[in-house]
Length: 103
Image 1 (cartoon, rainbow, N blue to C red):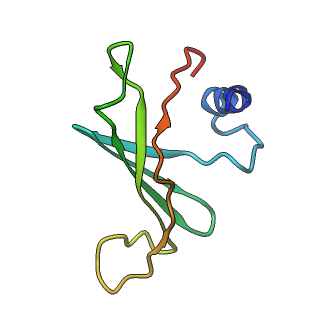
Image 2: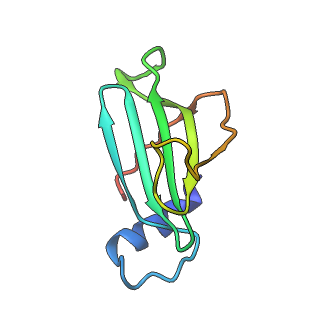
């Protein structure tokens, strides 16, 4: 939601000085239409896997993503089996990616 933009902006501009406990920093990787987001919280690692939906064009640009997987692990081990990975339910409906110049 748009009310999150000021909070994200403050975190990005002052990464060591923000006091918002709900915002965690992480990394993302894009390969064609696949997006992987990784973040670390104090007690666990989180990984989100999403797909850029090509059927939803928004003014000539891709504007929608869909969740493929949402996982967490206390050891950052998402690939080996057996693993301590916990998978969560993800929504089936795609969601709109909102670009904002403030970020």
